[in-house]
Image (tube, rainbow, N blue to C red; front, top):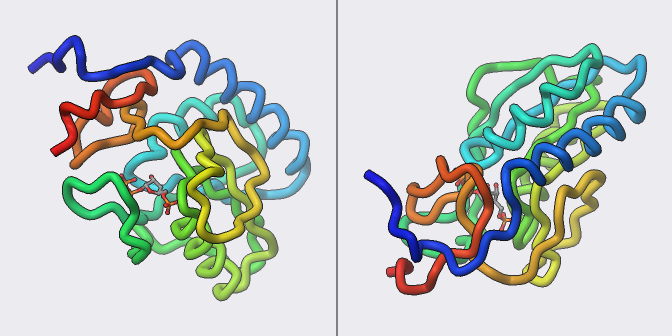
Length: 182
Ligand code: PRP
């Protein structure tokens, strides 16, 4: 099934732009974590596309892990504020330097919850890298070390970002046409 032509009002970032930005962020991450073993955590599901772009340009000593975080339930465009975290497979946190990879930071609840989780489990350090940052919607103050792009308060889809679990496989980030929001 092909998505309708008018699904998006606006294309914000093409795949080419995202990959170019991932390359720049990877360069900064490589430098910051030089000679430090790093654990890079992909936040499922949304971050998976950006995460693989980023990882292709990081050649540090690192291991990759996955966590599921969900706060948007059903066909809603606003966060529930209740974040559910699930470690996909058990991995070492104690004394590790952790880099969380996100697709978007909106209210900040998900990042805050993840940071708390890693700190409570004895990590050495924890930082955030996100493809998109929506500062206008922030409810809690979170420090984001690496930001791909800042965006305004529009509901975006594609490149891992969904609306009601669809549209994640669109290879760019765009603003959804409100007519497709139920
Ligand atoms: C989205 C996104 C972030 C979080 C950001 O995840 O991937 O993890 O919301 O929102 P916040 O800053 O308001 O917490 P979602 O809960 O929709 O799960 P998904 O990645 O599986 O789509």
